[in-house]
Length: 435
Image (cartoon, rainbow, N blue to C red; front, side, top):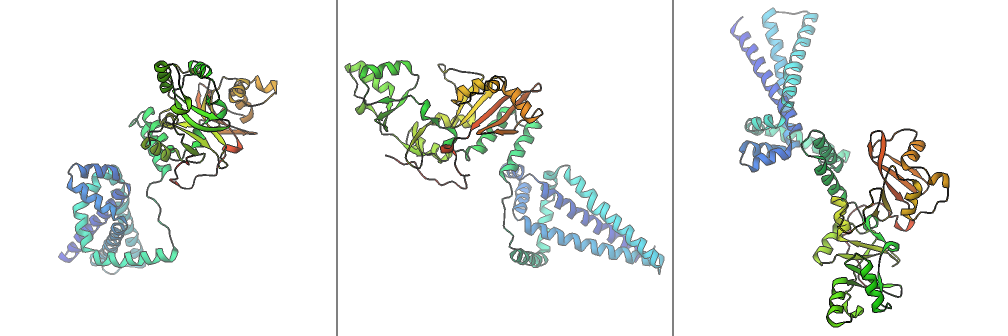
């Protein structure tokens, strides 16, 4: 083999190595975990910081890698042809075709598939290791990168492509579920994180206590009746009514303190000004507002000013951490009011007991005697999976838990027209009205 043939062969191997490098880099940065790179960079890893900066300019970075890969593959194929000609002299068409096929197979196997597969074993480590050399190559390829980036931008403008977020809420949910499956986070942490994601999409109508279930006092009540009501209730704050209007919020302890000190208590003087909020207010915004104003309870009104119920800060927190029970709360493991028109029930509860707890009118005795588990099995024709829904009339059942081939728990939504709101498009940031 003459020196020129040796140089061609060495050139082919060197270019094949560059092809493998570009392919591995592309795969590594596509699959790299930005959160991990950011953590490493914050801990003082300079290469991780460089890798993160390259990732921030991914479009330009990817263009440079693709341009470099195409260049080295094209030159490698040309040198392979020159090497074959020097080695065998003139070739027939069949020999030329075989040479092209062999060169293509070698480039695909050793320049594309193998390096990408190896890089995928640890994308972050490869991205960090390659970062300094990639920055140098990007500098060399800057003219070509700018040319092709400009062409890409022109095509994008012509096609009017819209930019989208790199990570969606559904993808974050999938990450959380995958972390739970792989043991990175436990079930309680997973539930809390998913509740936090859903928190911003929850509105007052979903969590309020309906007015029919509210305990209140009236300005027309005599003092003895107010005291008797306070003795029978467990609440620390009560709405105050004058005729059909909510005119204040009474702190029970202030009323009792005044009564024990002076022997009488003036309800009108002791009550505080109520806060009114609309049905469609997002609870994350409302939580911030109520916290700033040191307000623990708000009265909910619809768009016509009709009183629908009330909400408390505890209602908002329960959306994150689940039901919060005080030592004097009556806890029923088979049925619970979740707020708004949502209810939670055990699968073994009869529909009659569910309807009674919801205040739902249904006189079909055959239906009322059935357990929720049996009812859903009959209607759905199979054992449903967790998260599946079944609608009948103005009731919607969502299967929350399935254990031992039984429906353990469900959430039931009662379609109440006055609580039905259009989908939330964006946060309005509107504050509750005050009377």
